[in-house]
Length: 270
Image 1: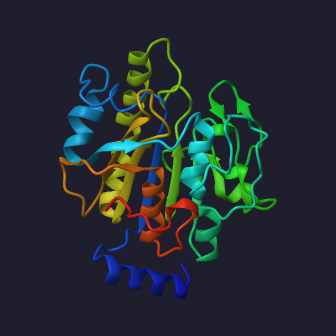
Image 2 (image 1 turned 60 degrees about the horizontal axis):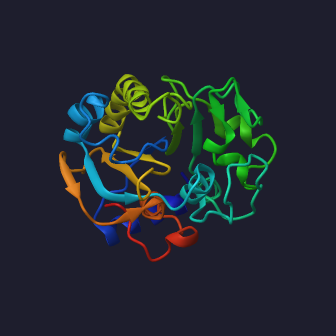
């Protein structure tokens, strides 16, 4: 982090009262929605019995639109960029985005995509498990040429975590794919139970924040959004209505960055 970024973070601390996190881990699930997960201790035992008791739960969190891709773009840039479909040939867009802002401030924003075959792989999908539409990085022009190799790679449990880590499970593990809603939820809950504890442990020991959310929901676009980490009150429920723009504002506020797109004037999640 450069000296200007460090000063900006210090000023953010004075204005918000919240010490900036050293790391933010953003884990994104798919589609099934709030009602399919919260309270279902049979198919989501990890989320309900282990994760929520140590987390802050936003009970009125919503996606921006449908389908998936415009929500990923909104999360990454504060705007859907006018996209209304999941086509992988959308963009690339010249709009300001999180990677661009963090890179300019001397910080690293990196994507970790499960089953991406190799760092910077450009394909629309791979092996029925990785889908480009669940990876916002390639839809923006801010990552020139070889930047792909450095900033977007396969997910790994022994990853070298950066200031901001955007983690996308594959389409089975993110609750996207399954014969029934219940199977989708079980798939995602099992993956989270195997991977999230280590991420949370790292966050707790390195003053980091874990944000777990969904791109969109089935009923009223109602989604799961939770925060876990130092400074968050375990077992808390917050009923304020929020969406992906509030979540992105949380990240930019934390790192002392200018608000992106439609996030200007909105509060963050804490």
